[in-house]
Image 1 (cartoon, rainbow, N blue to C red):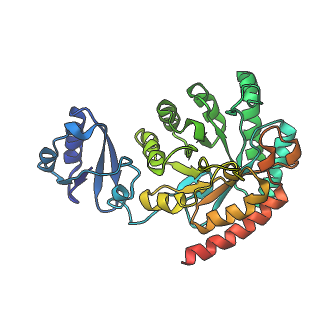
Image 2: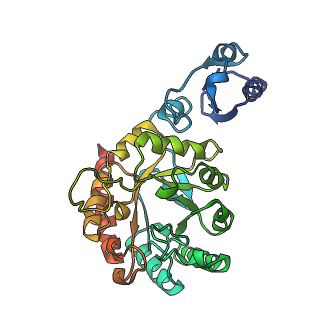
Image 3: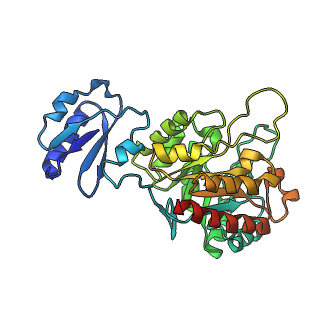
Length: 351
């Protein structure tokens, strides 16, 4: 990073940016109340740091040691108040603020009637954001892939239901973008673009979604280390989009013997992410456990760990859900969960 002097002129700033680009790198300019920081994007081996330190208006040129430089605390603490979490505004909802945010809805959009009932129940329970998969990544080609897999017309119709539900019940809406070819269409209808865990490593998809200019829900791969998780989030930030919502959703269990949950929910990921980055982080206890009887307790634990919110799968009749029926809870159960988690959040904020 290049730290500019407090009294550096705009001309001096533009000169430094031009010099960085001449070296073949891109720049990320962050302006705080007291200083301006230029983050360098690309292979820093070609950068003559001593030369940049001598340019007019430059206070210091410094190497950021972490591979996730643009989203790191080390970077953000230089241009904003130390320890601040980025607040991401979606309609009138603030993700990363003092109040937790709850995302709820079916794993897959199944029909308009079912979606409207679920959305109404989720709203009454206290959820602010509606989720629903139009394109569903599945392990088996013979499984239900979501209505979007039937064709563009079907995808457009399902997305329009999602948007209509959001408008009717005054909720923001979110769905997953499974591939680059879907990004333009999905971005027309939703407020948040989700990158699922299976696509965490897809650099091209991350860049494509980032360029849509909308907040990105970015989920950890079930086999990814925390360093990998945060490093690949950098691909989104490198496109100029820092409205990144991290999401912990469980990692592959280790050891022999029976695993009683779908994945292992790594709750340590929450305080680690908040310490290492300035991005908000949410937890998905539905995919992590795969069991509706564990959703409540794991949601409470996630909130106690400091999560900025939860993403929970909800259905009015879980037994009839076409995807992941075993991990769905009902709207009344969601209300109980949200009420308790809000109380836990207040206790955590006090300490």
